[in-house]
Amino acid sequence: MSDLKQTLGIFRGTGMMLNIVLGAGLLTLPGLAYRELGAEAVWIWLACGGAAIPLLVVFAMIGRLYPDAGGIPALAGRIFGHRAYVMSTFLFFGAVALGLPAIAITGGYYASAFIDLSPYLLAALLLVAAALVNLLSAELAGRVGGVIASMLIAVLFALVVFGFVAVGTGSEDRAIAGPALQHDMTTYAAVFMMVFFAFTGWEVAAHLSEEFKRPARDFPLAMAFSFVIAIAFYLALAIIIAGSDISDHFEAPFAALFADHYGEYAGLLVAAVAVLLIFANLSAAVWAVSRMVLSTARSGLLPARLAATTNGTPLRSVLVVVITLLTAIALAAYDLLPLGDLLAYAGQNFLILYGIAALVLLFAVTDWRIRGAALVAITTVLAVMALRDPLAMLYPAALVILGALVPRPAPA
Image (cartoon, rainbow, N blue to C red; front, side, top):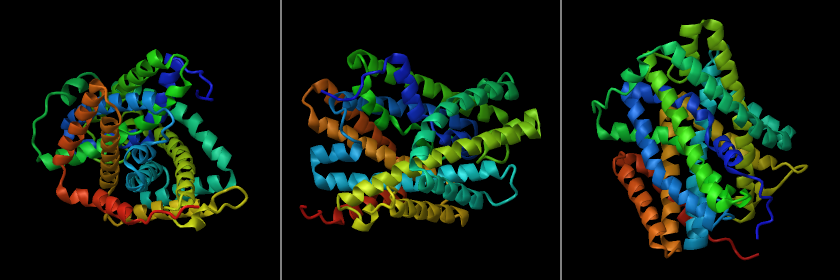
């Protein structure tokens, strides 16, 4: 029996899942996708939603069968052994090492609307400030994430309402006129990976099943409702940008849109709120990832010195996380790893991890219906990956090889 309190019903569970899944990446992804594909980008959001459905089914099943699995790496280790755990852990770290800098850069672009500095410098300052919050009060950094997550839903709702008013009627027709297929498949695949970053987080939401009063009935319903609401947000924001005909400021599209239609101060207000949300998002993320580094160091996969704490704070882990993320921001600043590529590589790694989760389910159960759902999810992942530029696969391949080369820790 679980010792967690079973307090969640359908509505509270749906809200909790939305808080986990909806992220600050939505403040930039519609603009970046539109820059690459124009109005066709809306169809990429639909394609991501379609691809996410079998993966969502997999996570719902994992949540019911392994509610205490502790994430995809731990689940892979449970079924396939220690080496699978290590490789999956490296894939996860590789995803957040690029995804979080992308979020910081998004904040930098929004901040540059009212601070005349490089968005990359502002991104670095945001990240350092988020780290300082962790060093001063890790508890505060952890708590603020939940509060801001609820604010994000309200902000997204306001963006949708005022965004549709701004672009006017007919934007839906312009945005969903039909895919023209004017680009090569590798371009569509790259944008798919970038947009898929918005669909990450379901693996975390899946492990809320222990906290539902009636998990057999309410858990899958809450997951389905949260998915439908999330997709509605995604498509609405994508349609708004596609109907706006913006020609620049794709990295901070909503500040530009509101400034054009409601005046400069409206754009500045949107930018300021976006920066606040992203700062809080980064604070919570640095807190979470630094604890994962600490845990991984304690297990022997990373240097033991990273497991040290100072007054209860894993100072070295926080510093390693910040230095890693700042390095990615520097690469982006010199156009060696642009914002869109950061998101695409992060989304790609998460998609691979989700395929691993489906593979685990395929081998872990005997029920042919569950195995069939897992097989559909695996096929979906492989089909998308087959369209990807082979060179883009070097990054996850290098992480997997690195994980395979890490020696197994000696028994304590």
